[in-house]
Amino acid sequence: MSNILEQAQVAADRQNWPSLVQCLQQLPLKGQQPPETVNLELAVSLAIQVLESGDFEDRWEIAKILPNLGTVAIAPLISLLEDEDADTEQRWFAARILGKFDRPEVIEALAKLVKNSDEELSQIAAETLGNFGPTAVASLATLLLSKDSRLFATEALAQIRHSETIPPLLSVVRDSQVAVRLAAIEALSSFHDIRISGVLIAALKDPATAVRKEAARALGVRAYLDPEWDLVELLKPLLWDLHAEVCHQAAMTLGRLKTDAAAAALFELLRSPITPLELQIETVRALGWMETATALDYLQQTLIARFININSTACQEIVTVLGRVEKPELKASSAAILMDWLKTRHPALHSPQIKKSLALGLGKLGDRRGLDALISMLADADNSVRLHCMAALKQLDPVEARQKLESLLKQDNLEPGLKEGIAIALEEW
Image (cartoon, rainbow, N blue to C red; front, side, top):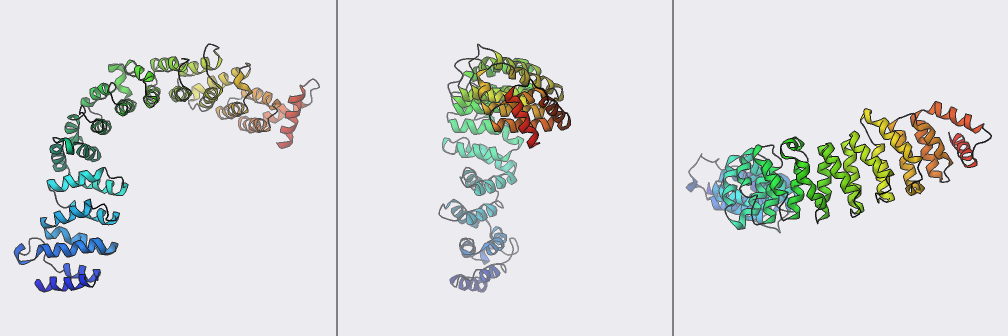
């Protein structure tokens, strides 16, 4: 046996890594020979050299050998794993090999790696921990007891995504460290467990902005809780939060509830004179996602009501979301709102961009009543607006649209701008 290691040492001195691997492959498998007959420390040292300097194939082969050398390999592998000067591939292999050792020190080292900025390393660490199963959960739960290790242990538990992680994660949802609370809430939001609902509700009042935002996001996929908890009333205060990101998330979550009460809360926010433009736009989108008759009614009121101070950018967003309505039973209502608004003298209608969005929306909604509205927009002096109207006309009904255009062009009393627009449209048809 010593002869094999001597040959391996010679290969290492010559940096002949394939030869070194071949030598180590001749060592007895674990359990075939008493450990004292093999210089395990030397064998591990030589194997680590392959991990550090060999190519991918050499490392792949040595990764099969190291677990057979026993627990003496753990410490050197952890050192390599934690060496920030080592390249990613070396540390990736170290993590992969350590996955063969179900030991507390291994779990702790891998848990620390979970929060590494290198996505590849973080992923292999999380996958390895997940493969340990209940053992890893128990070990990580122990690490939660120490303030110094609580954060990376929580982040590691979050990566395992197994129901056994719920109890230890629940134990830290009120931790003094914001990062710990946030990681726990994020992880728990993946599970639909009766114990988690109350935690998310309580987190809506957390002093940390990130935690409130995450709790609001998590409730967005739990609309079924609304009848029991009255989520709208719980989320409404967050619409007026001091931090914009919380307000935005609360608006998105209410949009996912798709209830009349949620729509009313969003409309109240939308028509407030103190609501910032960015939040107005997010609120419009949330009402659009609902795709309910009530939500459409609120969007229409926002467009036409004089008491609502809303600028042209928000108006354009309303036009855009109305034009994207997918529910067949609401398409006609949405088209009617756009056509009615076009007849008003709203200042926002001077914007070519809004008129293009309006034309695009009428085309997508497929309501043939929009033909006349689109034809009237051909009188616009902006060529890009006319082009959008032509495209929408063809999308609605190209045959009838052309017939209408040709018929109108023959009328003597046609307004000059419209006559010119129709003539250009027919030339481009």
